Image (cartoon, rainbow, N blue to C red; front, side):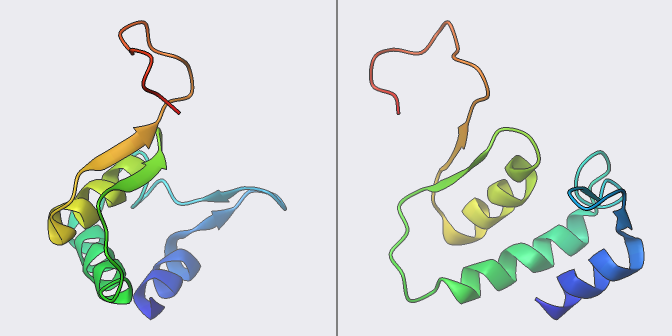
Length: 92
């Protein structure tokens, strides 16, 4: 995870005490090669745990979760901000 720390320190922008802007590689623009390395590292960190799904937030988490899901060969589920009209009763 040192690479992620370095990327945040080098390219992240602190807007205030609550917001770290990382849109140059994580939000609005995706550095997919770098995110793939992070996904591989996350897979190795959880290698001793049985995974059946990855749950992430609807917005910024989808990209990295998708790559982790690909490496771990499990589906990715994202939490929506608003209830969808097409959802059935089996939801959390």
